Image (cartoon, rainbow, N blue to C red; front, side, top):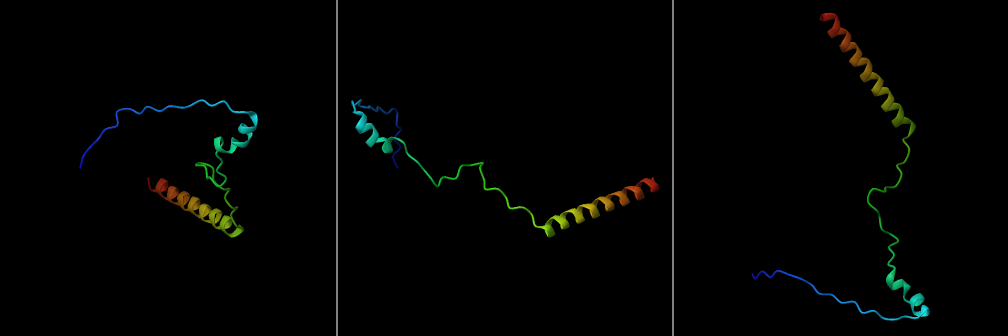
Length: 79
């Protein structure tokens, strides 16, 4: 295989005088639009939790807190 490095690029832009009618007609060329683009960081809002899911989360959280308190009391009395 042969390796070639690109050292520089020389690009030229020609300036063309345009009439206002041409500017209006060719505006779509200069302003690209993407309607279905999904931007990073912007996500669809999450659906709210159902009543059963909320109940189970609260119930098991309370069970875990009570379990931690009971273990804490047992460790404290043994110490």
